[in-house]
Length: 170
Image 1 (cartoon, helix red, strand yellow):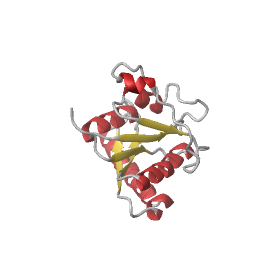
Image 2: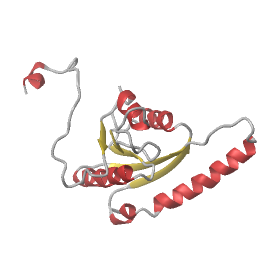
Image 3: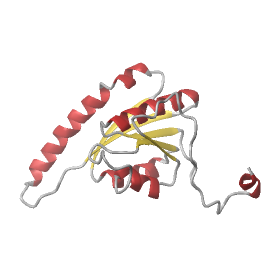
Image 4: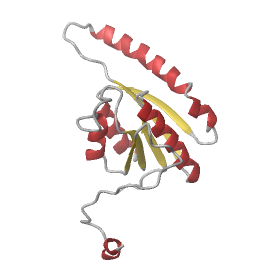
């Protein structure tokens, strides 16, 4: 099994929760030797009556706009001593994020618990729920109310199947 890299992936959808996830990521990266990868996924609806050229040109336009918006986030300039890579991809968000985690051997994902398209629900049925369910690395979900300085308790869900007896005793 490949060793996870010291990268924190922050899937970013411009919601308040994802903005806060980025702040938490910088706080953690500042304490450890982590680099941050900020990933925005553009989901373009595919309709039968839309010409492929239109979709591709529209995707490029959205990609440029998203990259510009990511580059102007205040956290990017503030924490410039932490290496931050900005990426914009096109596809189904959960699928793109899960493939990216696997391909890049991401060590930690920090993401908002509610996405911008699903603000009323906690995590059920959302991109976050799919990432939590299927990713093979630790996932930290935060809300817009979780301040980077007030992280006190973290819940670790485990079936303890591969845990050593001494870990279970603790």
